[in-house]
Length: 120
Image (tube, one colour):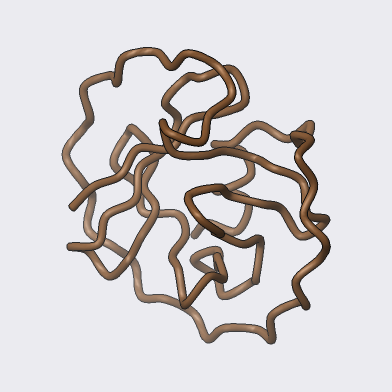
């Protein structure tokens, strides 16, 4: 199953695939991050954020993206996706940060930039 995530303005930026080891993909087909419980890890093992009830939060507790139902704006149509590239091996995970208090405000970081910050 694939779930699309939208940025703060309602543009589709990334998607999540449960069929490919719970990984986040860019529209260009690159696997750049993955989920363990509610923790989001970059491909190199760095803890980069949280996924809580369909909303992606950064380490400071600010929203970065969300599913259609949680987006505060009307959402744009999804673009056609490129086929997925094969995944690199995942690095060992670093220790996660503690969960911050969550904000209703959005981060200044773009969703695709955020999710790709620790890619291979």
